[in-house]
Amino acid sequence: MDFGFIISNAAGEIFSPTTAAYALAALGLAVHFGYSGLLNFGQAGFMAVGAYGFAISTLTFNVPFFVGLLIAVVLASIFALLLGIPTLRLRADYLAIVTIASAEIVRYIVTTNQLTSVTGSANGLAAFEGGFYDMNPFPAGDYFGMNNRDFFIRIVGWGLVALCCTLVWLLMRSPWGRVLKGIREDENAVRSLGKNVYAYKMQALVIGGVLGALAGMIFTLPRGAVQPANYGTELTFFLYTCLLLGGLGTVLGPVIGAMIFWVVLSLTQGLLFGAIESGAITFLNTVQAGQLRFILVGVALMLLMIFRPQGVFGNKKELAFA
Image (cartoon, rainbow, N blue to C red; front, top):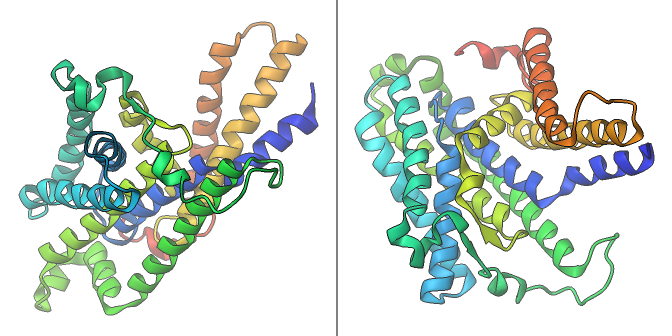
């Protein structure tokens, strides 16, 4: 078993584009649940809306990259409004039910055979990333063991994470953010002070949804394809795992949580596959080992919630509303 190779692969996940996408989407959940108390179980739906909005506008209408980006953001905002208008005046569990159902509705819509010419049905869409890589300022060559395309998407992905973290940090330190935290703790008390709780919740839902849409784009660009199977319900639960690992009411928590999540997944997969190939483990095959790594991550998450429920960067005060 080559431990050096396994560890280097796991370390490579720290700054991978997929980790950046998970960090962005988990940051959106932090705005929803960590700061506002909105129980959104459909962040995968926002990611799908962003990814498909960008891919369809690029392939079908041949729009420039930044126009496709704007379309994805607008569609995510509309999606948030459609979810929030009928539910945000009700109890939090209604939003949870609606969001988890709506994410599945989006996934089933894009797999409809009648829309194959637009969405690609179950096969998805591909070859829409050309406009993005046309902006690549790095010439062909080796950049820290990566080609210029891989290096460029990492720079853009993590630059976007840094920008969004800064914006969320500034928002949460503003009077607007303090009202959100008050709504999380006791929305009736905030309402008694004359604040429009419904409007604040809607704004938070839109902002977190836009972050999810941006994450969906970053998630698909390195692959050059968007497929509905990647946006199942389990994706949202993975994002909640990242959020809980790092800390609910924090800005850096989702980012660190996404890093930990993907490093642990890569490390456990490498160790299990290496043990199987070397003959140290004979009662598992590679398919079973791929599922076992999620079990191990689940066990680690349970232990974390028992011994440090506030997450790596969280504090116990943030658990008061839970």
